[in-house]
Length: 338
Image: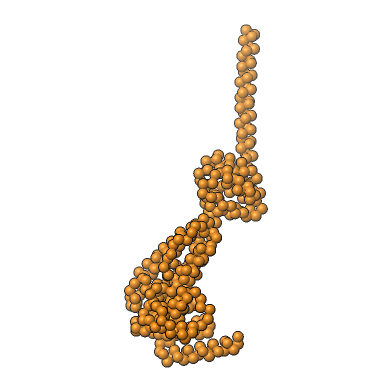
């Protein structure tokens, strides 16, 4: 009987040992997990904002390595473990990210999952030719891929476009094309009913001339009114920027027009041709398109520079000639002062 009791006591002791060992192991796991979670939650070692670029298909391990390389992680293994423990390996996004200084492991993971990549910007200024805008796109080092699209003159909408690193040049051009189509269709619906043209293509041609004639936003509807009035009266537009486009393709002339150039016949010389030139002479912005489709109420047929960047408008040739004489006087005074 004594032997049996000793045997039973040994089994009990072994069971107690196993239970104790399990409790210790669980406690160790809990303590280890608590320390790991505290480490993942506390501020990281990054002293200043850093930028990382994760290529499509990047593994969790390679992301951790990149983050460690810029000083954002103390323990890359912890980043990997937390991502996998939370089952978020497939939720991490590719892209270019700005990691704020002091970001914790958990904050970095959330940032990458949200996919808020850094935005870059390209501004296509109003009044630039298609060739000039395409040159800006080709020279932008954040965009990728060969530029293969060749839009016609006047088909792009001048605007500031936001994009993420890795976007293709062709894709940005497509956005500019779509943006102009959308804006034109929207404004066309509310156009004035007595316009001297009937197509959207003609609207863009005239808008491009208005765009090149003034840099003063509030003048655009008046400039548009002058050209609309002249077209209605079968008068030639007589726009200097159209002459320049016929000579240089829209590149700056760098000087005033010569008499010989004004008298040189090209398809774009609106001193010599009737109506509109065959194509736009630049890419007009939204404001110029709006001005052409809803010009100001005015009987003006002429305008000339006023010496301050704007223009003086006139309804008669006599009044216009007086304005021109005054402008010549201002020009002489400016040359003498210079």
